[in-house]
Amino acid sequence: MSIERTAPAILPVSTAGPSRDTRLEAEVVDLFDQFRDRLLRYLLAFGLAIPDAEEIIQEVFLSLFRHLQRGKSRANLRAWLFRVAHNQALKRRQRNRRDPESLAADGIAVDPTPNPEDQALSTQTHRRLLAVVRALPEQDRRCLALRTEGLRYREIAGVLDMSLGAVSISIARSLARLTRATER
Amino acid sequence: MSYEKHPSDEQLILDLDGELSARQSRRLRAHLESCWTCRTRRQELENSIAELIRARRDEELPSADGPQALLKARLDQLPAPPPRIPIWALAGAATALIALAILAIRVLPSRRPVVHQAAIFSIPDSRLTPGAAVLLNRRSVCSAENTKNKTVPVALQRQVFANYGIPGAEPREYEVDYLITPALGGADDIHNLWPQSHSATVWNAEVKDALEDRLRQMVCEGQLDLSEAQREIAVNWVAAYKKYFHTDAPLPQHRQ
Image 1 (cartoon, rainbow over the protein chains, first blue to last red):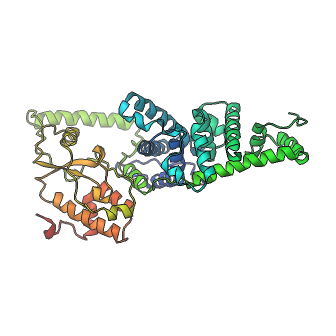
Image 2 (tube, each protein chain N blue to C red):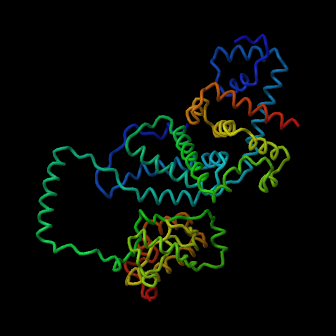
Image 3 (cartoon, rainbow over the protein chains, first blue to last red):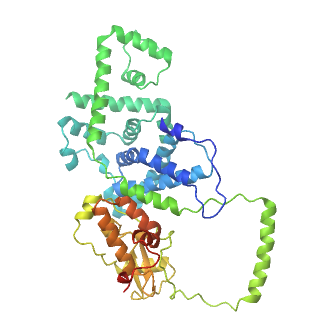
């Protein structure tokens, strides 16, 4: 995987005021290019509106920059990114719940009827599948979304704070539902 | 784990995902070799994974260009990490500071209230106004007909003045301007607004307008990336003006 490949072991500590760690900046932008779409899809599956999700992603990568700048662990940055995004999304949703004006943006993902974009999708099956995904229990939907974005079970367990066993049961349950939907 | 019985969906998926131990996986595969039912089930599960991935591939996401440019601009503006200073140096610095403070008390006249009204902001404070862009691609930027800046609502103007420490500012003394112009995808957002002083004589709003027209023209003619244009204007519009007009001072035709 590319994260491990790009990771230098020691980071130079910038000493002068205006001089910036341009290499670190470039690395963070590179990770943004690799992960932005995946994080965005995850946050949308989470039920956030696009502007909220984009804002969270900005925060995630600014935090990543500070994290690396302080010379903190580079072990499994992929799981780190998803975990930070997940925690920010939880906070954002709590805030949205308190602020009734943005309530409308919440809960989009649990609407089981296909939205206009879905209707333009090529096949009936895809529409049905996405509707099934939207109707999954929240935690199952998150597990499945993280697995879809390529995370290992251990990483998913770490992001969602679940046991390994619970992750595998959740994924099996979701796939069984999806399989029933494709067979119909 | 015995596979005299048929394995569960969960075990089949764990095996597909490479999450079983080598020994468990061997036993499961031995069962699959002899069991058409379980092989079919595994195939069905794999098919629904494939369908899910295909369905998701069809979902369109907004372009990453704008957000990437915004991230770059924000990273550029983060403060450098504090240097690691040994304790003895700190002690030295403290002594020097005390000396300076004593000097300052003697030299400076008595304290006067800070006069904010005279503040001239040619370039915005990057902490208050890092720039913000909406998700637009080049085509929608270039097809927009009205390229003139919209007027900023008065309430938002007041908030900008307050953020800049000039709460009582007269709107006619300042133009609350977009850092990244809406004509280049700039957002209607407090992070993209700053009070540009009309008393700025050199790098004023008219000069910036000329830069914005130039950048938009370059973007629409394909000579410059939209994200790059947004980034340059957000990081330092004066530097961008100098770069694109090949000059160190505003051109006479842009000064009004």
